Length: 280
Length: 47
Image 1 (cartoon, rainbow over the protein chains, first blue to last red):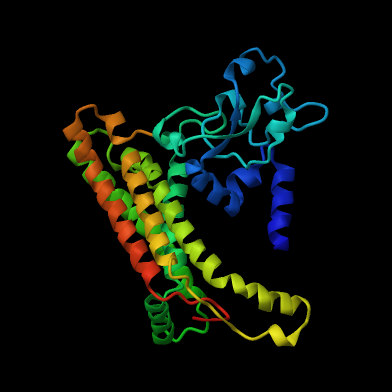
Image 2: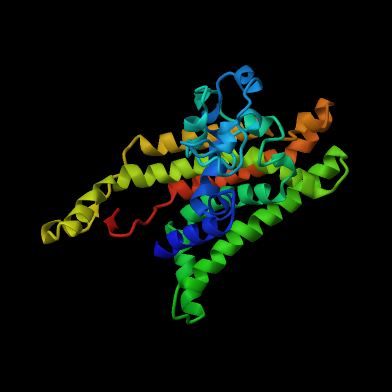
């Protein structure tokens, strides 16, 4: 935790443009991808007001408020990618023309607009790679907690006579969030380009269609986290007991899975699948 | 993004372009459903 904040201070102190938040922070990367289907977006209320604005405080800042650190110019911003929702632009705008605006989720995934500070997402290899990591990361982060996968990991650990589970877990994550998406992107991209008779090989297809998978990945994250939230909320009791140094509350608690939860998880997953196929 | 219909106007060719990605999405969905229906271990809790 201390290292995380030291890295944030060091990198943001040495480089302009909220470099740590934009390129390094794993929490930021997670939100950049998943807020692409958020129904909320920091954007301008009336574009005509920006047309007559001479000061551009939303990006330049002013005497009392900072401008956008990741250099997202509000009138040309496209979607939530690279936006940290810090709301500096909202406070800096002298016309009160920037806010968190509700709308349909996912227009940034369908339109291929050139956005301020990020360019066209469909032309960015790094953004597409990040999406693939997040989508497959949703599966792997949940898979390492289930019995069959844990049994397999312990079997490898015992067979190789290792002293720690770290190498096994590391290998599984590398296979799951790097090799598996790379293989899938290459295979599907190659077949897609061949079936569609397009030029350029598998990479442009893998770049474009990566973003269609965002709803599916986000759905899996929601379904997974919902499981922990609704079955593990009672863990606040032993945590509070530990903080208050009360030995009575230190016993393991029994987790109950609400009867409605599996159906809700499937509903969320299928919603993600439908939205992904629609966007593709 | 350059979705299938944005890349190719002809519907049948756009569908051909889309098929591998739709199959991949369904495969990811199937794996996700399988994971969610397996017993998940949570540290310090009795399931």
